[in-house]
Structures are given as structure tokens and as C-alpha cells.
Image (cartoon, rainbow, N blue to C red; front, side, top):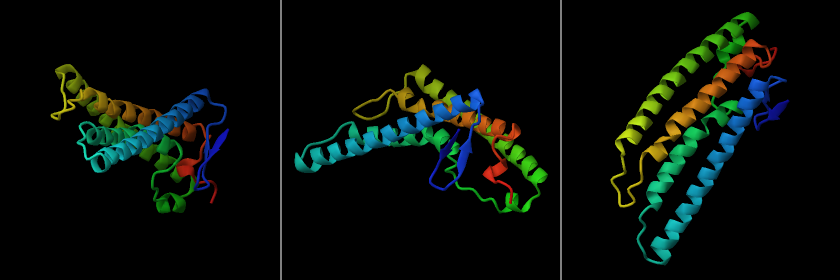
Length: 183
């Protein structure tokens, strides 16, 4: 099965159950991220109405919008990776022979996986620190910070899983290296 994206690139998962499950998780994360963005827009509109129409003050809206947008960005990482929405500079891979392109793809994906794994480790550590210490924001709302900080380990875990799936797809020759077919 393949999913079509705006750029015309096709993301292949074949009949591989692992790739299908990860693609489903990434798609679900994309929907959650979109819902967070939509919620932040609705909250912003409500905040504008309260401030400028009712001439009232807002307490939680600005903080909620910031947390929602940052969380949507982190949670949506895996969906963007799945849909190949990140910026690619493929001049070097295009100029390489097929075997060298494959090796470069494995190397860069492995390095990227290692970097995201480190980010996941420190994101989890930061979330856990906020949770175990009972951190609250220094605002009137006083939100428990472990709630918005949870998007760090969740977002990076989903991204890591998607990147591993991308590596598996290249190794199993379900997806061509760098998404480049025969040139």
C-alpha cells in the first residue's frame, strides 16, 4: 500500500506489518497534532473575543496556546517524517551510483536515529524531572509542567519509531534510498 503526498512522492509500506503499524501511529500522531493546532486557533479566537470585545482579562489562554503549538510540533514530527515532508537536499545522493546511495542512506539514517535516540533520552529525563519534582508554571494558571513536557518523550519516541521503520523499509528494499527511484 502507498500513501500519496502533495509533492508526488509515494511512501511504501508493502505487506510489512511493522511498517503498517508505524505508519498508522504516525498518521494518528498527525491527526492529534492537527487537532492541537485547531484547538490553539480556537483558544486564540476566544482570547481575542474576551480581551477586545468583553474587555476582560485572560488567565490561561496564552499559556495553553504556547503549550499546544509546541506539543503539536513535537507530536507531528513522525507524521512529517512518514510523509517525507522535511526538506531534502538530494544533490549528492542523486549523483551517486546505486550501491553508494544505499550505503549513504543507511549511514545517514543510522546517524539520525542515534541523534533522535539521544534527544528522546534527554526529553524523557526532563519530563521525568518535572513530574517527580511536581513542577508547576509560574503563572496564575499554574499548570503542572509534566503535562506539556510529556510531548518531548512522546514526540521523539514516535519520530524514532518512524525513522527505524524508514530504515527497515530501505534495508528490505521496500523503499528506495532517499526516496529516489532509478535515475
